[in-house]
Length: 241
Figure 1 (cartoon, one colour):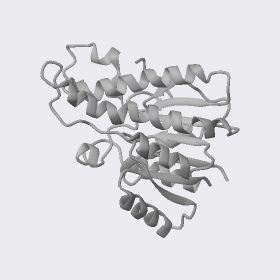
Figure 2: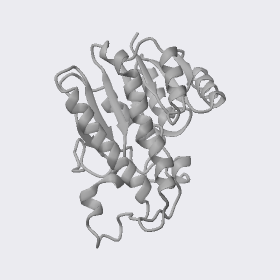
Figure 3: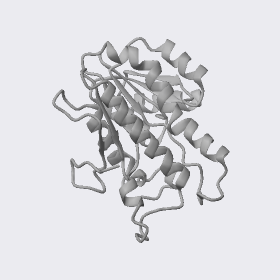
Figure 4: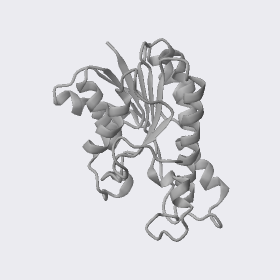
């Protein structure tokens, strides 16, 4: 049985991705910083008739936690780096302290690096390894550079810059794995109604989960090193970073 690991999977978008992959026949590891929340998520999915699931304690900001999760998993075909934090509102390029950046980057950037590097050896053993990094259209430099666009958010500099860094990491990761079976992409799930957004948004968690799962399940002729944001652009479409 093929297997998948989804970080930040105990609720919201990550939970929906885990559910979809389990429905597709994968054994799914639900990564959760709080182990009790992870166990509760697994039990919820099992109550819906899904059985091939396991909760894994995984705090992506902790190397020790990542290493322990790696030791608990023996094979892997799909990695979805979903765990992320916003850093709060009213972020300022002039007044937000460097420590605030470090806190967000610890999860959104360094956490992805930790998890990816920890599990890359297992993924290399797969015949069809897939990595999906969950990003956002808010990380688009070309859109943000339009200073007259009042509709484009410009007060989330910490969160936005962390995801821009994640996009660049995705490109470089795809480049280094370009001559292999890997498919590595970044996906914006859309403005989704979860705890992350105060349950505001134009997409449901189920819709967002489908957008991410689509690229976790792409075939050998699928893209790599790309960014997809189907809510904001015609599908499938790529957006310049």
